[in-house]
Each structure stands twice: as C-alpha cells, then as structure tokens.
Image (cartoon, rainbow, N blue to C red; front, side, top):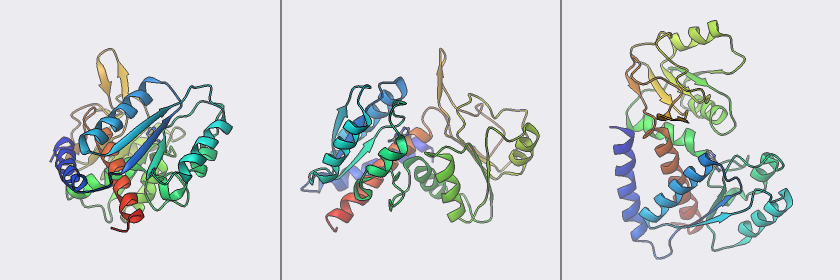
Length: 266
Ligand code: GUN
C-alpha cells in the first residue's frame, strides 16, 4: 500500500468516527514564524482538520512576539477547557527558547508529543512506525539506521525503533564518509532526516531488501526533493512529496484523538 493509500484509508475511518461525536475535537495551532515551510505545514494541518470535521484554529502571531508573550498565550491555552490540544509550530524565531516553550505546554494538551512528560510520541516518528507496521515490515532484530539527530525526528525515531527491538545506529554530520558507507551497507531500515537533497544515491551499497524512509524535504526550481535520490535499488523507498509529510499530518490527528478520548473518557 502506498503512503497515500494508507493515509486516505485511515482518514475515511477518522472522518466517520468524528461525524458521530457530539462535541468535535478542538485543536489550536500557534504559529510565530512566517517562513515558507511553516506556512505550508500549517496549511496542510488546517486542511486535514477541515476535511475530517475537526475544529481547528490558527493563532498567527508576529515574528516579533517575545518569549514572555508566547508563554502567556500558552498559559491561556493550557487553562482553556474548550481547547483539547494545541501545537506551537517549530522552528521559532531565534529570540525564543524552543525548549522552554515545549516544556510550558501542558502534557495533557501536547499533541506534538514534545513535552518530556508527554504520553504521546512526536508525530513524524510515530507516523513512520505506524506505516511500517501497516506494511508488515519486520522490525525486531533488524538493523535500523537513523541518519540525523534532530530533537523532532532523529532522536525520538531512534527511541521508537529501539522500542521495536531494532539494533539502532544513529549517524550524523560528524560521522565519517567511510563509516556512513559501512552503516548504510548493513542497514535493513534507513530513516534519513538530514536536510540534504539527494544525499543517499547510487554511490552507496544497499541491502536489496532494505527500506528507506525519506524524511527530507527541500525545494528548488524543479520542485520538492527528499534526502534520497528516487528509485534506489531497495525493497521500498518512501517518495517525496507524497511520503512522510502525509504520515506526520495523520499522526497529529491520531494524537489529537488519543487526547480527546482520554479527556472525555471514551
Ligand atoms: N515543524 C516541523 N515539524 C513539526 C511538527 O511535527 N510539529 C511542530 N510543532 N512543528 C514542526
């Protein structure tokens, strides 16, 4: 099943479920940065919510918003009982400490799974695991290679793969090229999130049954591109666009429903 098929099937089920709810789930999106990527992500999240009958509201703040102002808004959202969950779109402007913001969001409303006490997992890694399960890709005892160590993707991805009993290796910008080739050659599952267009290419050797999950997304005049060149000689490679981005968006909705069900004890 392609990611598009997997996501639209699940969205149909969610739409049906939400249509039967008397009180619709209510998600607030706080956006401070006005960059192209954030605008695109937020637009996608609002579109999904509207398609599924979920209430969503965008609070777009000027980039000049201070840390204190943002913390005040978070406090209000934490206390507002009508708001089931909210996200603060990352990245934030440089003058705002992201860790401080993540820690200020009540774990009960943290649909991104960013708070250290959150019961939920961050959306991109969780969406990837859900898809690998749906595709019946065996994880236990397999060599999983996570390329990139960001807080949003690399680190939580490594943790979730470990929970699935994979043998997890994390490589990053300080890993030598020679070691990079070694780890790629031995990997069964590769999750790449380094933000370098076409980094994985034919110069690397792959296991023929390997699975490449491409989290990268960069844009040039010819369109959107992943961190891996298309059509590498492996069993499965997720496309860009139409790949992991859709899984992240679905996962946000799944997390919202988990919060909603817990809140209303259903
Ligand atoms: N920026 C890029 N991905 C994400 C995400 O999953 N959540 C938030 N809040 N910001 C992001």
